[in-house]
Image 1 (cartoon, rainbow, N blue to C red):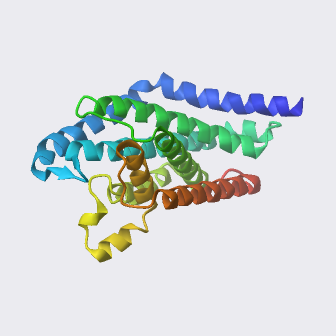
Image 2 (image 1 turned 45 degrees about the vertical axis):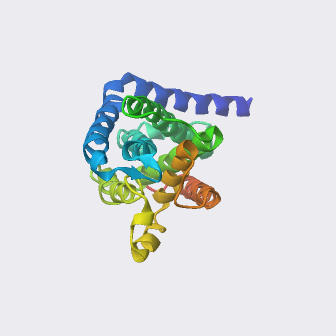
Image 3 (image 1 turned 180 degrees about the horizontal axis):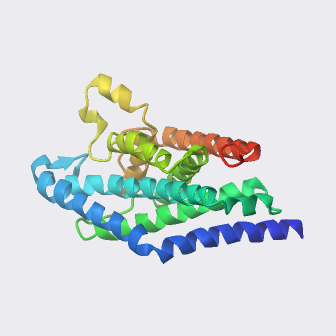
Length: 257
C-alpha cells in the first residue's frame, strides 16, 4: 500500500510538470523553434554556403544534430530550475516534503518533467530542421539513448541549481555564464579537428562535446570522439548529479530554513 501511494505521488509530480509544459506551450515550445529557425537560416543557409562541407556533409546537415542537442540541453535544464525554484520560493514544496513521499521520488519526478520537455522541444526542433535539410538516422538506439541521458543529466543539473539558489537571479547565473559557453564550445557548429592541438585538448574537458558528438554519431554516423567514452562520461555525470541532488534533498540543503 505504501509503495502504491509513493508511485501515485511520483506520477502526480510528473503529470504536474507535463501539464505545466503543455499549458504554457507558447513559452515552452515556440521560442526554441523560432531560435533554432534563426540558427538554421543564419548559420546554415547564409554562412553554410561559404563553409561548404564538414565531416563529409553539407554544413547545414552537419550542425543540425548539434542544434537539436543544444535545444534539448537548455530546455531540460531550464524547465527543472524554474519549476523547482518556484515551488521552493512559493513554499508549496513543503507540502511534498511532509507527504509520505521519499525524496528519491521527488527528485525523479522533477527530473522526469525536465526530460519530457527536453524531448518535446527536441522533437519540435527536429521538425524545423527537416524544412532546411534532409535528416537521416544512422543508429536509432544511439540517438534515443543519448538524447534521453543528456536530458536526464541537465535536468539534474537544473535541479541542483534550483536547490542551491537563494533568489531568482541565482538561477540565471549558471545558464548565462557556464551552460551557454560550454554549449557553444561543445562542437555544435564545428569539428574540433579544425582546432589547434592545444584547443583540441581543452575542448576534450568539455562534457557537452561528448554529448553533442555522440548524438551526431547517432544521426550522421560521424564523431570527433569515441562513442563509448561519451557513454561512460554521460553515465558518470548522471549518477554523480543524482547522488548529489538526493543527498542535498535528504539534508534539506537550500529547501529547509
